[in-house]
Amino acid sequence: MNNDLNQHSRSGYRAKRRKTNLILNSLIIIVLALIIFVAYNIFASGDSDNTSQPKQKPKTEQVKNEKKTDDTALNQESAKTEEAAKEDTGDENETTQNDQQQNNEQAEEASTEGTDSSQAVVSDGGSSANVIRTIENPAWKPVGTSQTGQHTPVYNSNSVDWQEMLNAITYATGLDQNNMIVWFLGRDRSTTNASIGTVSSKDKQQKYRVYIKWVDGEGWVPTKVEELAKIDR
Image (tube, rainbow, N blue to C red; front, side, top):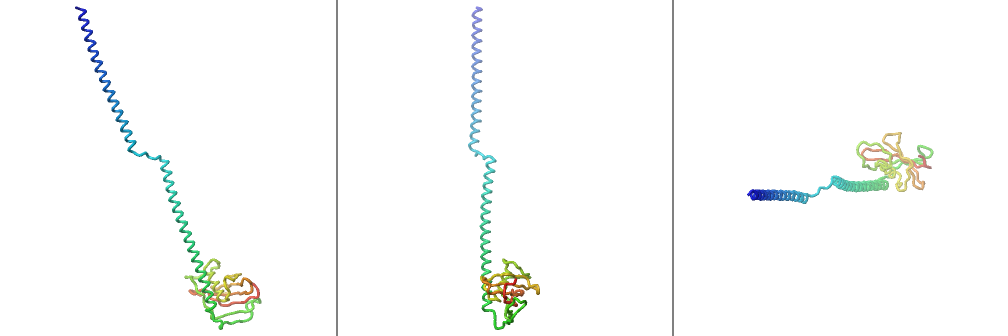
């Protein structure tokens, strides 16, 4: 009887143990399943975020791209500025050439049409022994000017004033500026707003000292021409 009781107790213990093991194994399986599910959701959401959001360029690459864009814009602007400067220079040169041509034409017209030679007073000799004869003509008129405002003589070969002085010399002598050598052109210290020019033809056969005076608003007018025996600056 004792043996039957012991055997029954052992059988109950084993059954209870198997039941406990079954419950524990089930719980383990459930926990593992939950872990796997949670892990899957985490990885799946991470891949989705990476896919939906575009990759940002590294800051270094962005800076390089921005610098390239700025350099390109700067180069384009510089090219436009240079082109505009060339156009302005070309227009300015063309305007200067046109002005000079117009001045030459005006001087030539004045020398051929505007002078009444019948009123010219010609006398032998002049201010020095180098002067062959002196010519003065009250019919000489100012050659015109593009200058405005208070006038101060400018002895610069690139200036408008210089060109207008040459126009007056051409007007008085009839010597073409394309066939003219200017040996001297400067201030006449004997009077105000006056200049003296020594010129000759390129073959030096015609040599003159020309006195000119400034008239406000009208330009330079010749006052006296001396024909020279030799170049005297």
